[in-house]
Image (cartoon, rainbow over all chains, first blue to last red; front, side):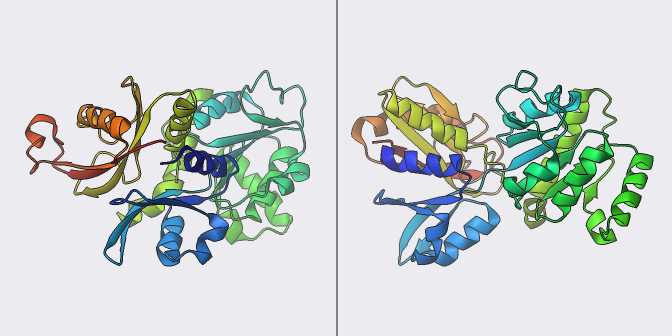
Length: 230
Length: 107
């Protein structure tokens, strides 16, 4: 592989854009197809399938074998609340190669010192979420316990295609949340998208344990398609 | 979708830019139970430093040796490992699966 090609592939990833590297496994010939170039490529159908499934694979065309290395858009976790659980969650999520953004309008909480190596926005969720463009590769996790902050974030998340929405709080807290969001005009079908109480039930107690349960639920949601097709 | 092999390709780029001879091994096909999915990478440099994996550690040793040859002559190689393979008795996959690996040099 030419270094330039490898470098282009890595640059697409860094810019949160999908790309596919096509390799003729006999001749070694290679080309990079960016997401927006897929439609003009002779292998358009195969490329589209690979992108949809997020899986690399070998394809045959005219007696030649091509390997398609698929790089999908990186998965991102938007965490509402620069709280203790978030301090455990952020580095664990980074370890899973997830992009992390932390949002909390309370400037005492949302400091870079408390969250090294991740993007921290000391803003209200409804101010910054539109700019973040929540897509189907994004998970939104509401952890503040404060309806003033969490509710706005959940409303925005429910209007997007994000693949996971979770909210911290007991069953009773969630019941009251449902009432507030229903009063705000959100439908029952949409409200059912919220994972609450958040996380897989592993009996988590400490902030780090809760972070594990939240991340496990995010991974399970992300991989569900694959588990079904396996 | 968790794109955990991207840091491996970033490492490959960084090692090459640092002036090292570098090869990338990629799982291109699997049959039955294979330890790592298609698309998994292992990056190797000329001093046999490596990062990533293409199996559960069962065949990496052989691939590193092959990679040194690829770094030397620049010719990509296709390798296959499985219980039916002759080399399997020395380095095969205990899980009973079969994998095909493509090894290429970063130029």
